[in-house]
Length: 243
Image (cartoon, rainbow, N blue to C red; front, side, top):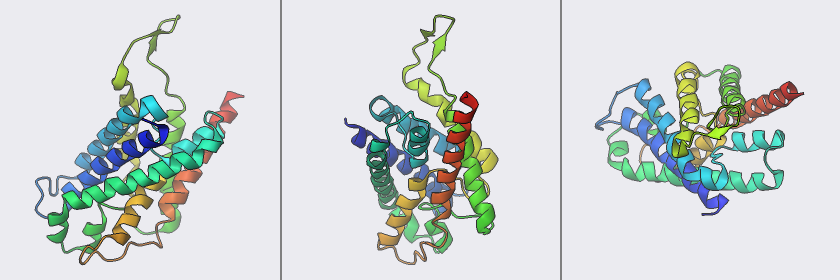
């Protein structure tokens, strides 16, 4: 398992489960139809847990260019590896999204509403105001990255004795993503991850799905630029506070 493969598989599982729950909730005829926002945010949090458990031992489980770039800005990650990681994350996001389409194809076909067909692929704003939408993604990603910088290893006591949580050490980031979704996700669907939106949006544009409608590329820059700005601000504040 190389770093590239770990980031690819971890991100693919993240998107498969995360976009999968959106398909389960919004598409016609599924067992989870209309089960609501709590189901979506909970499943996304658990999807992050799954991706982190797989990738963490091999790549550190970034699964998100915003995380990769923020760590590089904070001098916790080598800049030379940044493009390599982002490529793996984008490929993984595309694979995960394609698998969601394959799995839920009958339900995509049974759904006439183009916006609902698009929802399991890319994010979209509840109220389209690009300035506010961009700010929402900046704030959501800022919270994600800033808190991640303060995660510590599972230790106890003055001598820093490891508690030995193993894979359960991935739980804090799952809780973090969960509360961001519940508290800040209602405006744009909280991409907070450029490839989480871009990879599936590319798949939406490529697949031969009848009646799929527009991939809305005029909005696509918001969930890319917003998370990158938020991550940069979080990294700069973290570094400033260390001085």
